[in-house]
Amino acid sequence: FCVQVTGKNLFLRHTHFTALQVKNAITDLQKKYLGSRSDISTKNPDLVIHLYIKNEEAILSLQSTVDSLHKRGYRPLMADAPLKENLAAGLIQLTQWEGEKPLIDIMCGSGTLLIEAISQFLRMPNITEKKYLFENWIDFNKDTFMLEKSKLMKNKLSASKISKVIGCEIDVDIFKQAQKNIALAGVTNYVELHNMDFMNLIINQKPGIILCNPPYGKRIGDEKELIDLYSQLGVFLKQNCSGWTFWLLSGNPKLTKFLKMKASLKIPINNGGIDCRWIKYLIN
Image 1: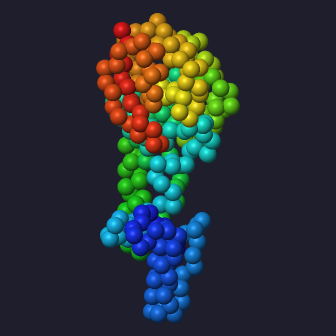
Image 2: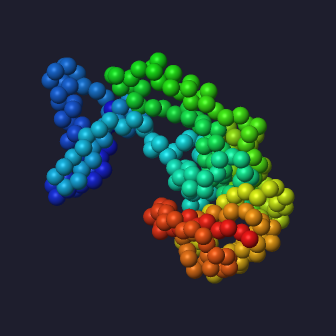
Image 3: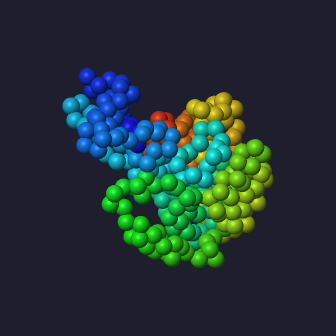
């Protein structure tokens, strides 16, 4: 097993020191009552014991996975400033896309928004095989676990019902990352991926939803250079996407004004510590 600690108080200021105290307490009890103690493994533990400290209170719990559940396992390759999978999933839910309308990400990066959208539609319970630590718990019931997993797989919707899903990425290296991530996620057959400037994308589908998580000069791109990008984006949408709904993740309100489009909804989003808005536009 291993011990992980978050939080601190006046007397326990260093998480490593605190973790050692918990580890020592457990192994001392093991030696006293069992005559032997468990080994410690931080890289491949059978159990992870987590201690959360806030002021004079502490919560001791068992962790169900080694990694955070937002790490689906399909994304070993990422572009700069990647969008976390769980945040991408939440953004897709806010669009209320349910697979019946076309979906286009015109700056898809490593493909996270598209992968999460398709996974939600197909109700995929687990994109890649993940090690669940709860399988090592003493009360784990494998039969129940496999039964519930099979129920989810049976609920998977028919692929024929899904609408056109398109991704567009201009950078060839990031485009290749997206291809590999989409393949690892098992959704290659559902995505039409293009390595091109979105300005060259021909949209001839019925109106649907367009997504975009463009650079906004905080982690990627120079703010002055991005003005042209946002201006071109606004022109492209107004000329080619009448009747569509456009959702943009913005971390820089100075840039979104260059779209010259009126927002119908702005939802506050925290993206890696950056105050952002998930903005909805109705394109006339």
